[in-house]
Length: 456
Ligand code: CMX
Image 1: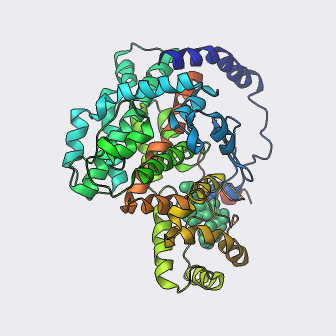
Image 2: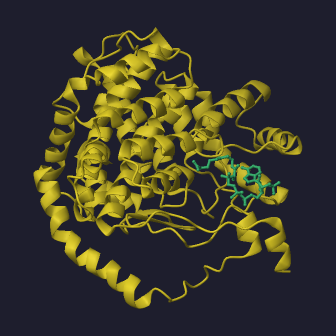
Image 3: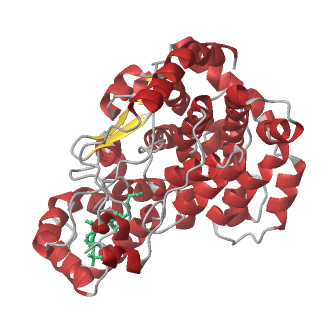
């Protein structure tokens, strides 16, 4: 982490001073529009501005911005596969951690750094054994969360804390070490879990230390062309290449979504107790596994497949609309639509849609992808007329699952595990900054029904 550390070290003193000044001299200043109401206490704290988060902000209309940069700007400026406007998640990680756009050399250095830590895709023995002993058909997210927690066996932060060899000002250094190690292990972890659920645990592919992180997720899933994939994945070389770029796109844009979403907030909360990065992110993964959060992508695939089976003409808006109404009137949600913060089409959905549009030939015969592409022309009007949800537009989960499925990832439960690789980048970067700033343990005050009733 030589260059990454030195870039971070250059930034730290000024940022630390700014935060300390705010805390010391302006701690009493009220945050506008952040009033806490009975509605927000009972309503999942919507709109309460009460979490400190550095790397991303979510604008209800424009969507996610990574240190102020939109997805489009990231696609234009971050180093990656120039042929497909696709940045490497490693360059996103650099941006999230430092607030700066990395050079190609810095990105390559981070790619090598992560590959060095990945030990050729070998997992620590205890984690390997632990995974071997879990039932193959156990939910992939349960397997992933258990495996990530078990990596804390080697945590530098936990060891240093226990031994009293690190002081508060330096907590961030071992947090960064652990975070990079955790991220580097994810391709091997999800590759192993994918092999367990699809092939009783026999390896599907091998680690390639000259390639990037997303490529290795794909190769360990047995989805690349050439020698790295050990199984016959039925993909043409072009399709394998496209799948790798889909992985880069997906893992790049799901990295962070500011601090209040369940996976990010959980990581931040658990980390505030000085739990190490492995335990903190394992907790975040448990939250990501919920159907209203990360699991939604899988729900979308099921929903599109069901709809395809139920209506005669998937290009007929009237039939689509009738199908959606039948769902809503049986009190089911339209998966992949709506959002707690966004009030517009999710730019992450837009980016995935553009990926499909650029490959119109590839997807022209895939009825599920076609339906995913038609739905935004029909569903928002239905949801608006239904009148309940605040955001009738597609969110990111609308597109991702069917695209993965198209290339052969038919184990729907697994899609959230890929999300779990990506989401590590943002919350772990923030955890490093939490330690840089020395943020305290989170401890908001709770209120009971009687206390709330007394207020009215
Ligand atoms: N279809 C039908 N009804 C919906 C809806 C949808 N897609 N989205 C919201 N609603 C309903 C809610 O269930 C709620 O109904 P009740 O008042 O009966 O409880 C009402 O509209 C108001 O909800 P909201 O304020 O607009 O939305 P929330 O902030 O409460 O919830 C979300 C946000 C994402 C959980 C919700 O829109 C939803 O369930 N969407 C479908 C699942 C989904 O796509 N999740 C992925 C989100 C992205 C992510 O975090 O990964």
